[in-house]
Length: 232
Image (tube, rainbow, N blue to C red; front, side):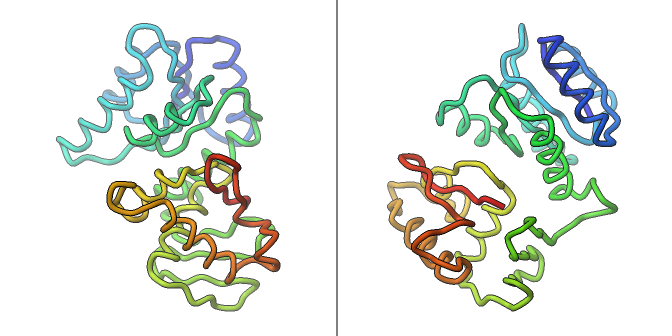
């Protein structure tokens, strides 16, 4: 795993936290060294700070994704770190191909959990690809290959877009997702074609099928003035 951050304190803290969780970590302080390392020997995952001197984090992300598309090569998992918590910054990072986005300050445990989650989705953690997501303490299981869902061991019947929306949520736990982001990710659409009410209606349906009390949701919560968050 490669950690890229120009702040020595952050770089050291992130490295220690990930090593304590069993990861093999290398750290570099700037974008030039990061690109050299990625091109010479791609790591299993990159933890990338956006605010780097010279070659910035977004530039690195863009270059990596463009090269992968051009060469049809392996997709490198990338978690973006940023001190900027604005919605626009998150959307730009995700649109450019970040697999997750974590705002500073963050807990070492959360970063390690996010790293494990991203690697599971990419098939590089826990012994091969893991296509079943079991958010701890929720009673929900989601298999993205068979498209099966269980709640407390019982199968749940979901329509196609309900399943795709749920799958997106469980793959991005504890992250506030805007309605526009969900329209783009699940419907490959925008507000110009479909309204955010499409998302609202599907969230309502999921709550009816998954929540003990749909009127007081605990799994799929509303983030005021933003959108929704999966709490698993």
